[in-house]
Length: 262
Figure 1 (tube, rainbow, N blue to C red):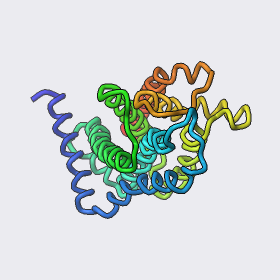
Figure 2 (figure 1 turned 135 degrees about the vertical axis):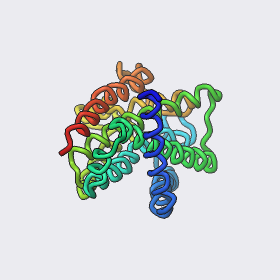
Figure 3 (figure 1 turned 120 degrees about the vertical axis):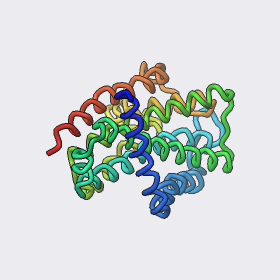
Figure 4 (figure 1 turned 180 degrees about the vertical axis):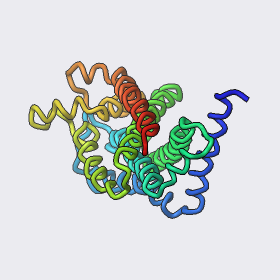
């Protein structure tokens, strides 16, 4: 058997471990999947009537691509909780004493969380279709938009693994939750950057979430904020470049941190 075979086999074993944990605790999994749906319904129905859609159109069609993007960020908490809990309980140390590939531990975690992300995104899309959201540019562009969303989740997943290995304590999840919401609001998901104070609007426009939200709106054919900046004109490029950059930085850092755990 080759090294690649054993890495794949060990990764699948650890992916199945995560899936079995979710099967034994369905309530926690269900709440995690329903939370973004609750936020979507709250914003769509409570604030939708007061929001003016750029160029006209249905507010929920404007809102949904942004909510899909935000859902990918919410997944960061799932990764952080799972990895930091394993580290705090000594499970990670146990893995390091076993004859399994070190790469399998983090790749198994990432595979499980991507399955979770795909399930959550599917729920959000079905919920969006139920409340009137549609894509208008064909299945090819819609699939490309879904791919951009999952790419963002995959990049943030490695950031979450690294952060959890550095922290090693699930209690610090609260600090992460405090940071996730400002990251989501300081973007063009809910509000046009042009309506913010100058420096704040520039930060919101440079937010990687703004690039993914803008690119997916265009691919789905939904209305959105159309700024006049270079960042807005190249949103599709940036929706790929930002996650790739995050991945290039934090995947090696996470692997290095795992090898140096004591």
